[in-house]
Amino acid sequence: MAASPLRDRPLSALGLLVVRLEADLILVLGERIPLTVRRAAEVQGIGVCRPEEAARRVAPAPAADEAPDASADVLRRAVDAPFPPTSPPPVDGGRFAEGCLEWLGDPEGLLAWTARVLGEASLAERVTLMLADDDRRTLALHHGSDIDESLVGTLRCAIGRGVAGRAAALGRPLAGHGVRGGERRYTGTAYVILPLGRGADCVGVVNLTGFPDDRLPSDDVLAAWADMARQAGQALAAAQRLVRAESDRNTDALTGLPNRRAFEGALAREVDRASRSGDGLAVALYDADDFKAVNEDYGHQAGDRVLVAVAGRLAKAFRDSDLVARWGGEEFAVLLPGIDGERPDASLRALERARRLVAATPIPLGACLLYTSPSPRDQ
Image 1 (tube, rainbow, N blue to C red):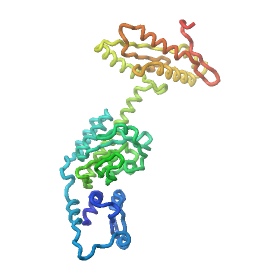
Image 2 (image 1 turned 180 degrees about the vertical axis):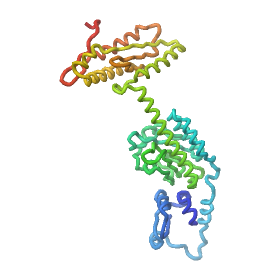
Image 3 (image 1 turned 60 degrees about the vertical axis):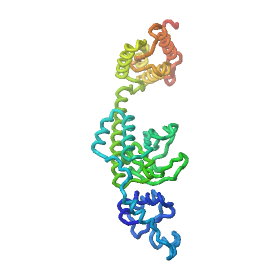
Image 4 (image 1 turned 90 degrees about the vertical axis):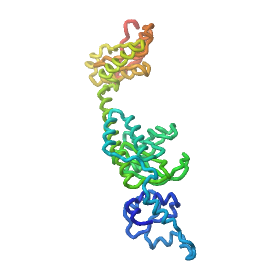
């Protein structure tokens, strides 16, 4: 193979060789081999050695009367050919960045859009997205085309292990050829892994497989895709921060329940929905009796423990479709949508049942037990 394609585009040059030959039949020889070529050879599973070592590792040369092998000429023409045979759409990095910004309020939409754009840009048949968990130790399959849906959320790999994990840890793209078929029975072997961000800021990876003619992209094209993935990763990190910030604004810090702001927003939406559908809607407020005395007699830390205990019991006492929120102080608000408007007593029974469940068991406060006071009807 000519030196210039190997030096300028090592991943694609070596990738094309692996398509036509077994990796263990290929050696990269040289006295001073560039680090980029060494890394590309490692990704492809190709050996690297000095010329004097090659004699011990390669087969004997063909006899003088044998016809010359024309494969080198064919490979040289293939390496110099543009990727892929059908040219991919041009990448406009500026417009892609603008598109990412438009999805900042919708992380899931951003992921789906990124997968679609990168799939169209690369002409890859299969695009999968793996996202890092909160502590940046594991990648989990989150989204993909032409995959077994049962793998979503269950297929995982440690960051730093495997090709996808290494790409996330290094913060740079990896490309190469895998084993044909395998347990998923994929027909293509070429793959490209693009990290969504760099280093500690990497939020996941994009896996591209199923390229036309099973060919890897040129280094220039690979760099363009990697830049797109980097921008998408930055936008996704920003979108996730916005979602967390919005969640924090709507969550009571002590109990973990939705706060008054979140309840009022949900109430407005449910009132509008009920007015259109004709369904019933119930709203209730609970108040912890004599809570001031708890703070005075046992201290505010004990009072906080009471509020947390009451919040947990209330949340478990209602349906998943109901909303329990901390209204303020020792007051809790409950929203019950979908109630039969002709049977208001049903909502009253549900509210009373929840009150009894909260009051049924003492709340431990260290060396003492605090009993919730029964209502007059229980006495």
